[in-house]
Amino acid sequence: MVNETHQLRCTGCARVIEQQALRGNFRCEACGDLYEVEYPGWSAGRNEERSQATRPNPNALRWLWRERRASTAMEDQSGVWRFREMLPIVKSDASIVSLREGNTPLYPLRRAARSTGVERLFAKHQGMNPTGSFKDTGMTTALSVASEMGFSWVACASTGNTSAAMAAYAARAGMRSLVLIPEGKIAWGKLAQSLDYGALTLQVKTDFDGCFRVLSEVVERAPVYLLNSVNPYRLEGQKTPAMEIAEQMEWEVPDHVIVPGGNLANSSALGKGFLEMKRLGLTTRVPKISVVQAEGANPLYCSMVKTGGKTLEPVAANTRASAIRIGNPASWKKAVRVIQETGGWVEQASEAEIALAKAEIGAEGIGCEPASAVTLAGLKKLVRQGRIAREESVVLVLTGHTLKDSEYTIQYHRGKLLGEDEAAGMEAEIEATRRNTIELEAAADNVLRELERASR
Ligand code: F0G
Image (cartoon, rainbow, N blue to C red; front, side, top):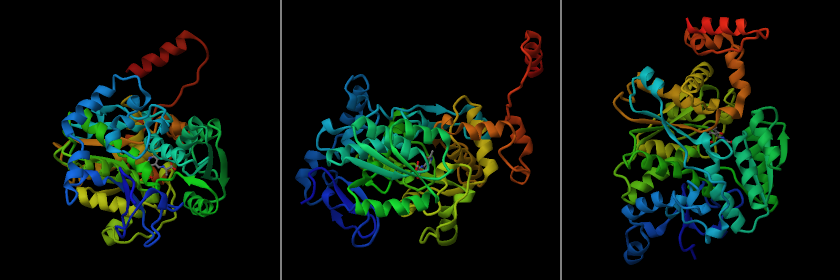
């Protein structure tokens, strides 16, 4: 028996199972690959009569989704559940755990548009979510499922944002949360959130990949629901920014969408969203989805260059963009599929390129955390390589808020972030974006002197 509205298909061997048959680590029992949620009611085919009955009508949906923005109901105000016809995964709306996530802005990036020559350049700012990162969109869906299934504990291994989001949503639902983070390797803002929202927070003497390995064993031995992005219900929420982008662009999707790559689930979630919208007739095409990794945590980049995405060698990850400091990404095969299906690219960015791009996004009055800035760094390279043409429209997905990692930002502006060798060749550009604080005695004359100097 398969659940009425959705089923789970293994992305490796195509085996279909029901929700209750999912193992605690979300891996297929037969081939070890990950599952994805699918909605049999949407496909035409043998069961034609049923398909007609359950397949949503695109015009009605567009109208309904817009109407809901004026509603006061929690599930309508949420920028995830507003699109709930695209993710019928909970049995009752009463199970929904929400912090009014989603509905994030799409900002034109005017300065970056001038410097890259890409006139129609936008930032979809997922850092404007309730806990300051894109993780909220997936946490509301997976945690609602966990709550409906009757779990009292949820858990994740994290570089900081997943744990912040999970802890907040678990607290809202009255559930307990268990966080495994790599010791000393996450930004303070994120650690503070986990503590504030009441998670049992374990700093484990290993990296993210080690934390994930340990937790995978824990969930096999204890009744704890895993909320890492191997959980297919996370991706159902994380696909909704695709619907928002389409709506914000009057249902004309952009030519390119660029996302940072860490554990590599978000790229595939957005791809799934765009592909499903096209399938349902909401849009007529799908953007190219490109992924950018940090040079020091680039297993997907290496895999594409060396084997065309056929195999992936884990790397020992090291980057100051700690959110994407991941060497053995769980969802790499899903990411490869979406990149190849949409015709996108994979790029990498150096520490200096990331830091400069972050400062440039900050200088637009927008700001983001280091991991998000790889998107602008990657765009510059893809334009130089002729892979993105200047007349095309591009959306950069900014995954986290600038306040997540203020230490990084302050070190950059103090000129203490990058080593000389790292900044070599980029000194002038970096210098032009630096804004350090100035200490002075308390007198108006001193302030006026600085004002005059800065106005020259
Ligand atoms: N950007 C930010 C700000 C992130 O926190 C992450 C992942 C990513 C990008 C990469 O997304 O893993 O889907 O490729 N952070 C996870 C965490 C791993 O634990 O918070 P991905």
